Image (tube, rainbow over all chains, first blue to last red; front, top):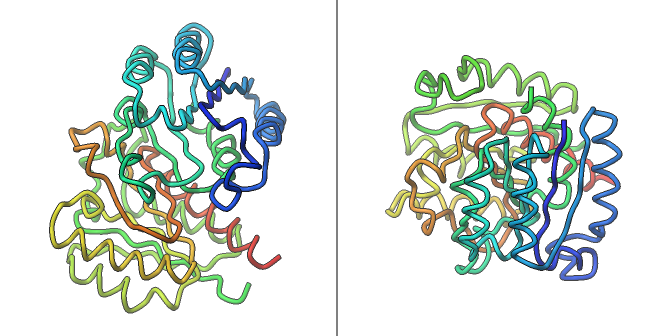
Amino acid sequence: MKVFFINGPNLNLLGTREPEIYGKDTLQDIANRCEQRGAELGLDVTFMQSNYEGQLVEWVQEGIQNANAIVINAGAYTHTSVAIHDALRAYEGYKIELHISNPHLREAFRHTSYVSPTVDAVVAGLGVGGYDLLIELLPSMLK
Amino acid sequence: MNNNRILILNGPGLSDLSAYQGYNYGALSLEKIERECSKLCKSEGLELEFRQTDDDDQMFRWIAKDSDKFAGLIINPVGYSQAANVEFEMYRSSIRMIAHLRKPVVEVHITNIFNQGTDITKPLQAPKGEMGFICGLGYHGYLLAIQSVANKLRAEQN
């Protein structure tokens, strides 16, 4: 089972940017954990991050051929990107929207998600632990 | 663990889950959800109180009256987190109270509430305090919430 973890803008700053909201783990820490635990569970995890909207669109498109599931944390593009919305609609595999914090509890400009209506499930506000919890869950959702 | 009791609250309408059949999670019933939750709580060393009510006032009374007895709350409020009315304000203020106590709170929905014609520009707002949000994972959403609460309570003790 191939799973893409697609991460959007500013997630490369994880561990240094506002650690009180996002925690101290770096994205590399999380990637290592997900890849390792994924392998134990029979998941082939590809962990990606880009600050560029078009790159995220291309990774989702690549998933159409190459991924059984996509977990996407589109960062701030969640609230702006019709292009990512369209790419996700074209992807027919299993897909989950993930956020470290809960955008609904933050500023009003984060209350709209263009990602949410396109995915199977939304997980937010569980901290960086959300990544680890999803890895454990994915095998049962992909059965 | 000092207080290892968690409360799972299910709001109005959730006594009958027949409308959720065919949603790709197999036959779903509240009894099945409770069974799965009990199993996980047991293995995580948590004591579970699992409740459902069709009475809105009862739901708010439980949140207000009983939440101090529990270390964490998982709630499926059905439409309350999106409702643009007095009930929404009641829900918001009661959840805010618990979040202020720095107890883990997670809102869970069985289905993805954002792809059923919900106005995505009017979602839950509960300023301050932490609160998790899970939708679209069927009964697995409850399990994910329990796991997250268990991890958080464990981290607080260390």
